[in-house]
Length: 271
Image (tube, rainbow, N blue to C red; front, top):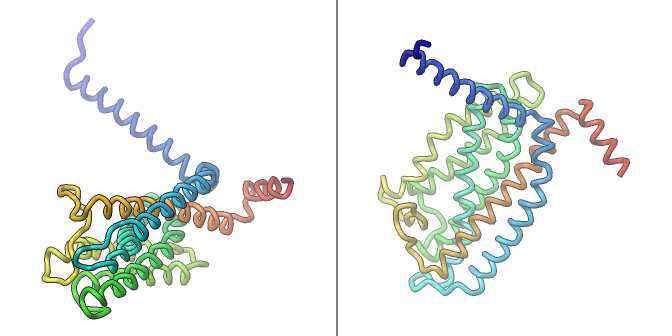
């Protein structure tokens, strides 16, 4: 029996790989339909919210009640337990919106658009909260509530981008182009994210550098950065719960006349 040539062997290998990735993609597509998304992720909300509540309570009690005062800033530094998670989430949520925008525009996955619409107001609130807490922190640290440095200005731009995306979702609510304009703005606006991230390194700014770094040890004592890390984790769990809850609410509103929603409502009434 003749042996396969190397070229034939490579083609067979490529076909197997292609078949595997195609099956993986098809399996993924079965989970992103609105009905499947609702069924799969609805039970997650209560668990994510419970974990978030425990982590946030522990982080706040530890950070505000037991963490030592900073040797330079005193107790005013404690606002970082709100400010840092809010700033981190503001950037992460916008990045997620830009990725979801690409998925929606390229693969026409409607659920991606609904998730982006659900998380946009959450990201806006986080961005505004970051700006407010940063201003409160800036008064005792810099002597003023606001300075037009690179980090603060780019974060303010991010807040306007969020407002623009939310406005586009509302403006095209009943249009065939619903979500497209918001997706485009989310993608274009993502160029602001590296500016926010590296502004303290690229320009002379009053804003301090990153509290956490992958390559460097934390700049604070463990009694300070551990509760901050707990707060970060709790905030991300909370946003995940809110994102799923809001997305499912949008799905029910958009597909109220679908048979599967009617069956769901009948089961709820029966209980």
